[in-house]
Length: 309
Ligand code: IPD
Image (cartoon, rainbow, N blue to C red; front, top):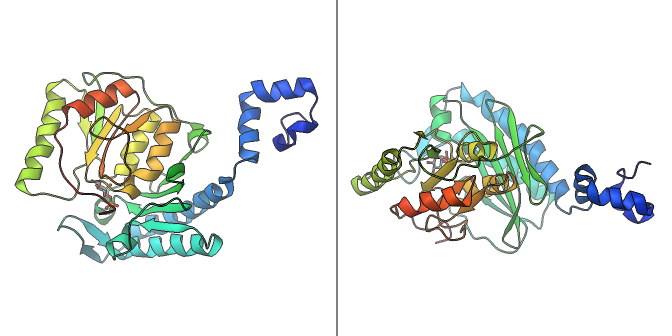
């Protein structure tokens, strides 16, 4: 047996092998995986996200029944409900003691409260408006928290077949390729993503456009809106964008992506510049703390309440 094989059996290795176990990042990763209590849950999430992604991809080009939720631009389809049911019923069968927070269950009246219990935080289709219009960025997002700490995140880009994963302490990947954020520190030259959120009243629009205008005035290289908060956050993780901010997103948009960005070396904070509050409906993410703080400093707050209100 090579020293790295069966990393859990570390005590059986000779002193030299032990040293190797310590020094070799591959060995360390294997050992961490062997001892990881939530690895099996993460593997299940990857399998289910793939299955759910096939359902979403097939439905993308079919006729849809569309309804509205909090506003006329906050859309939901029968596929959102179907996929959430598919995910939660499979997970509940396998992990009967775990708790669930799902976008559509919450809309239907389920409580959205994070406890210390192992909790799955699910967005069955992120980018529902894109999905309705057959615009490609649509994703299935599955986050997992224990003791209110995010343990792993899985986001499947349904139309590009990209599986983004992040496991606390073990790095972030897209289809096995390691993800790294950019090192951009200032707004000038930065490529920044945001999303509009579901409110369109004049006061909200004024604040939203005012925030965007500031970054443009500061000579950010670009501001983009792609219609899927989770995938926009994955772009920060992969280094395709330097930063992200939004008011009005939910814990199911944020949970999985937060682990992925942090594991790619980035930061995810509150729009006040303080620590992230998953339930606060506000976020700034960036490759560096300097950029995240600079973005946060410029933002005028748009009040969306809290997920757990
Ligand atoms: C929404 C999308 C949208 C963002 C919203 C999200 P949904 O998720 O990510 O781009 O502006 O804040 O809630 O409704 O498509 O799952």
